[in-house]
Image 1 (tube, rainbow, N blue to C red):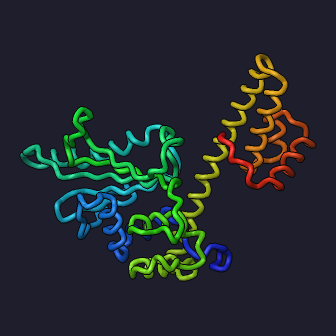
Image 2 (image 1 turned 60 degrees about the vertical axis):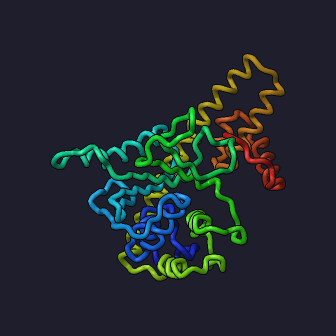
Image 3 (image 1 turned 135 degrees about the horizontal axis):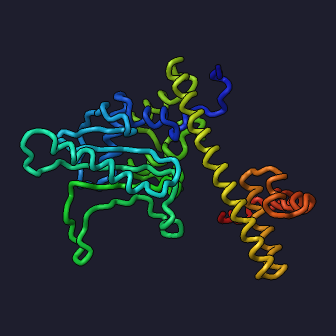
Length: 308
């Protein structure tokens, strides 16, 4: 068993199922969930209380407000091609549910699906730094809202880069916590609200109960395994694609283009932490050249991050 002292981090990772549930799914922190939901709707929704719906195990967090409106809150670690389709499918559960009881008068309550994304949608990769996307049914000719009972909110967390002294709103503070908690050594002074004081105390690894510790260990292992599998598939796909491009440049390009491509992509593989053998195999570069690249990267840490 891993002991408390084996962790270098002081606080749990909120990217794990345990951490995400602790911050938004624990009844003790319901105030934080209410603050988060209220901050998303820019005054259009005043969420004063929620009731957790524990019968829906397929969702990370599912809750109900006093108006009978449903909120689904999900943490999505990696990009999936049909993620938006899935979030719409989730919304349909509660719409369909209304039709299964007695005489249906065709009136539904609001359904709001919130996706906290640990990635950026491909179509937004080179767009503005705007991280909060509120998707509604709107008439594009007049920009009138056609239907206000189904909303999909997507938050691209990697775009949030505000520092502690730049935090102004509750939304800012919550995003800062989600993005940085496991890297913090103490609670920042800007997070002075009582809800954050309590949260930081609860999420300190050394203060977890044995049961919580076991849950966290399992959740952390799942998170790491998932990321390792994802990164392995990404690297393998990248190296296979790289081989094809090299063959194409050999047949249709110049020697200079080939060397430039090999240099940049081998450098990218080094940044990904790939092994020496894998870099040589993927790029076709000799070992001494790869060693030179490693030395170059060591001496030039500000070399621009290469797109892979």
